[in-house]
Image (tube, rainbow, N blue to C red; front, side, top):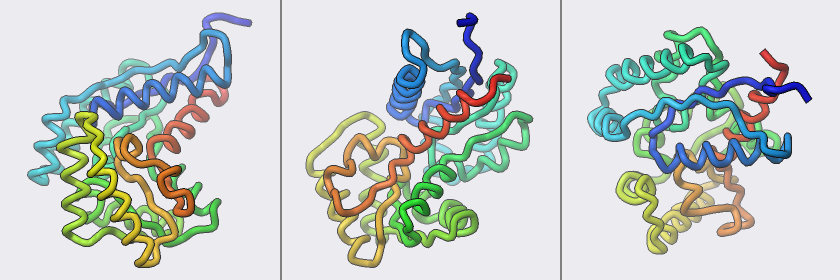
Length: 240
């Protein structure tokens, strides 16, 4: 076998949060090793942003500032010879159209593998859990509708606040509490009662708290694992 082995370099916009970044790095490398064997793992470049900045931008709806901040990081990934870029935050995809204009390399959107999997399962009315911004802003709802014909259902305002609080106060710190798990599963039940055929775990830390085995008959679409699968597939495509 020729060495060094050629594969695409993955540019990761990380730090949103450090828990998600750690999981992406672990899952990507595990998946590459499963496919290639031996000691092979992925070629990666990570721009780990300060999550405190992201939290401030999101809480204060400073989306232009967030886009400018991430644009600089995306440019750094391109300069570091990344072949494509991924953002490991559903929330910050809201400004992806803006920061992607600053780079020439492709961007692999987190919602694309999720939408494809939902349609593969024959579903078209899906609940969405995520940060308050993800659940209230039309960006993700419109993206799923326009690109995949999927209708998005979100929790009521009180439950949105609960989901958001648990993400920011617990999950990004890897505090996994049974009471919070029960709340998330209750909210899933409510979405199901309102006609949702499944739920998108639309924050890259939610899979730490709930998983498919918690509700076997209610499909859960984990954006982290589905994104990782798409990233690995892209990384192992025809060499540059």
